[in-house]
Length: 434
Image (cartoon, rainbow, N blue to C red):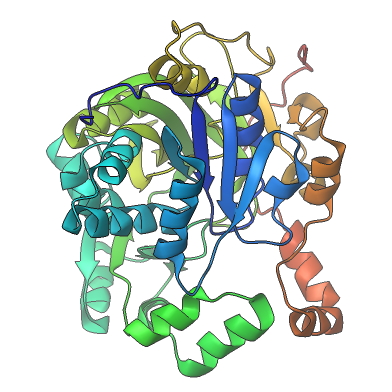
């Protein structure tokens, strides 16, 4: 089967494998929408405690092995025989890339065809995974981007700050959710960001993450002595925004663009967003998808400055929190996927809400954004166990880690409930949420 072929259906429903190395709530929401649209959903993730295990729409949950992540990923694929694989975090994307290389070396064409179908052109995997590479490509495509540079030494970072002025944004590849991002206001903070983001994990840090977080990946990173690539960007003063799209062989079939009105922590995930018609954001997605011949879901992050100029600051080569939302014509990403691997005509599902303000559950409720009263609350209706799991998440910490948490509950509570960005916009009147 070539990578351009629609998979032959040897079973009643098209099969999708969702891969997640973290315990974010978004992938479970995507699983619900996929199941509603007729997909058979299997999940590959850390167990126990993943939200996937709390929803009835997932047929099977296959355990992720942090010691042998790529081998366990291949095992999951061979077990469930998916027609399409959807990575749900950046590490899951990298592991699919690594699995493709291994499969190609062994001429395992069934596996390589699946990955091509799910992600698009394999020739561009390194570009998709690199923060600096994406910005360089976007600049070539005429997409506005901040000044940026690939940083190899601490002196490089200092020179960048001196040339373009502080503050600057320092980012490490292979991280997501704001965890690998630092905003440096001066040289001292730039030095600290370099130390935090560029270091090879020490044996002590790897052991700590294993003992407290059950995180086996850090053992692998320590053993390989690998350093992440560091990128510096000039800081754009403005308001954050993002878009998510589904594309097929470089063509965007559906997309949603939003401006962020509340976010958790300065560089953290969005809490409340406002759906907008943004030609600059969706045009950027189309250009990048076409240039890289991407298939599947991906997202782009932007900053909109005081003159309303839209700057691309980052690509997320995976599904994002917007992807499960069905918002009507042109904004049904799961429907677009169904039209390609479900052998059905592309019909947009009815919009789940007429409100352009959407509050992500459960973070919005936990942080107390001022926009809650006027937003559509994206609660997973019909899944009471999932609702409870998201309101009271299993931390993934070992019993030792939980003892450490118990000794400092106020610190963790404050971090979890901080909401530092609230857009200066008028609060809209309540809209129909039906």
